[in-house]
Image (cartoon, rainbow, N blue to C red; front, top):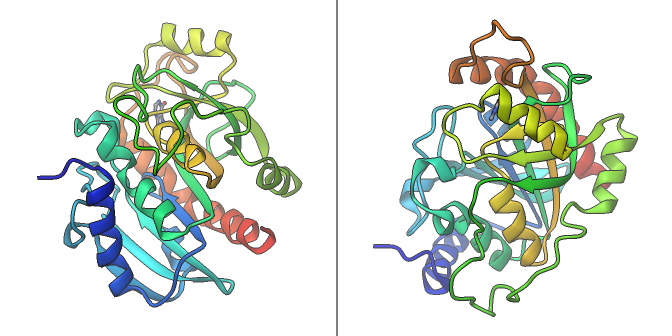
Length: 269
Ligand code: HPA
C-alpha cells in the first residue's frame, strides 16, 4: 500500500539509484503517443515502472510505463515514457509522485510534453506551443493536504512556474508561446467550455501536466512544457467528433518534430 509520501519516495529513489549508472540532471516526460522521444537517449538503461516500489502505473493508452536513463547530447537525462493522469482516479498524490522522486534524485530541469486541443483558432494541429502559463481547471491542487516541508513550502509562488530562460530558447527556435488550461477529463470539453476557456485566455487545453508543473516548480526544478496540438478543440470544427485514437494517431505523426525540439532545447540549456 502506497501513501505517496516522503518515506515512499525514499524507497523508490533508492531502488532507481541502484539501477541507473548516473544522476540525471534533466527529466523529460513523454505525453500521449510521444514515446519516441526515448530514442534521443544514448546508452539507454530501461526500467519498468511496475518494478519500482510505489511508482504509479498508468492505465492510459499510449503510455508505456517505462523509465529510460541515458545521455542526450552528453547530458545525463531520465525519460518517463508515460504518466498517470488525474482522470485515472488514483489522486493527485499519485499523479505527482514521480515528480517528487525526480526532484529528490537531484534533477534540475523538468521538461514535459503533452497532447492538447487548440483553443486558439490561429493554431493548427501539429503546432508545438511553448507553454508560458497555465489555468488550473481540474478543481484540485497536488499540494493540498498536510504539507511536508522537506518537499516544499506551504504557499509556493507560481509567477515564474515556466522557466523564462527555457521559454526564451523555445521562442528562439520559432515556437509560439501560449497558455495551457488543464481540465480534469476524461470526457473532452463541450464547445461551451472551450468558449469559456478562450475568454479566460487559454490557447490550448489538455488533461495533464499542470499538477506536475505545480509540484516541480514548488520543489525548485526549472520547468518547460511543450504542448503539441493534436486537434482543434471541441466546437471549432462543429461536425468533427473527437476521439482518443485520433489524438494518439496525430501525436505519432508529430512525435519526431517534438523530439527534435527537445534535443535542441537540451543542447542549449
Ligand atoms: N481536450 C483535452 N485534452 C486533449 C485534447 C482536447 O481537445 N486533445 C488532446 N488532449
